[in-house]
Length: 384
Image (tube, rainbow, N blue to C red; front, top):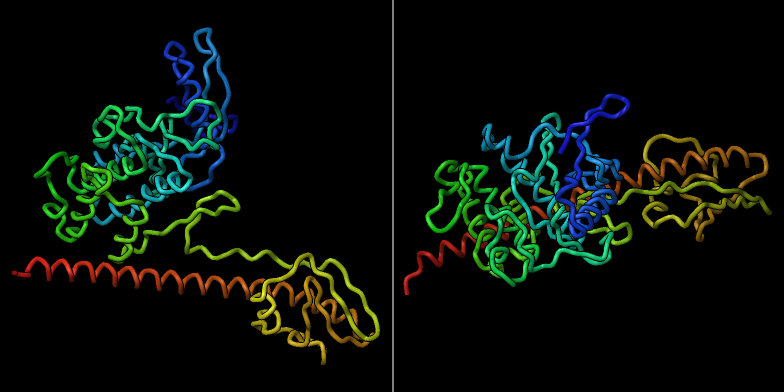
């Protein structure tokens, strides 16, 4: 990785393959990484801004350019992370890796060095997808990382990654994240029994120890099936900064489930008047909620008697209202204002609904966590 500047003097980072170490497979893996990081837009995954070929030592080698980050998670951990900030950072790591998983991509090399840190925004991004296992339709080349290939670093690799021929899936990333979560508190990577627990250094976060224990189980079958399960546990314990994500299949983008639908403004395309009836042609058929907000707007507005917002009838992409020829233009002018008011009002309604749904989800998860802990206490004290 090299530090470079563009024509405006902005600092960037450049990554390329060493010419003497290039193989056909490494070149293809590099191309796959460029393809994925160039297309995705998640805030916690590195974004490539440029790529191409550069001549180095008389040989052409591929490169890509990305934003420059002054520090990795490793450097941040070496400085020491306050216990109160660990989960804020860890939630971003979960978001980045989960976003890849939702796109059916296994990172396979999750370690502190592969999370880049921006201090100004306290932002963590996952980088280095060079040995990731991509789903077939995201491959830029004909070569993919075999699920059984042993390519991860040993310090954070799951047991199945160290076993010849063993299948490797997204739970290997979950294993590595569990190791890192424990290390962010204790400074040590847990291996084997008797490792240093979070409770021993941060009693207020003792509830994380059972979660870490699940994430770093030797058998992948015993770990959480998805990172969604890890998030649900944290959300249920009132970690407000943890968000749930989903894949928008229409756009193939990962979005937080708490983000409300963005209302597309309804535009006026034309108007006709016939026999005291004014007919407006719209650019699309508005949603039922939009129509409801049109007829019941918020805030002050002007109207013509008999052509108030609640008198308009909607039929497909048409809006119809009675209109005397003497006030047709004024009604048209008012209608354009009503369009904007309806869009703003409907967006506000969706925002409120999303916030209420998010609150209900969190309350439900909190109750579920409490029930699990209650059952555990009872069973521990139960004598048969």
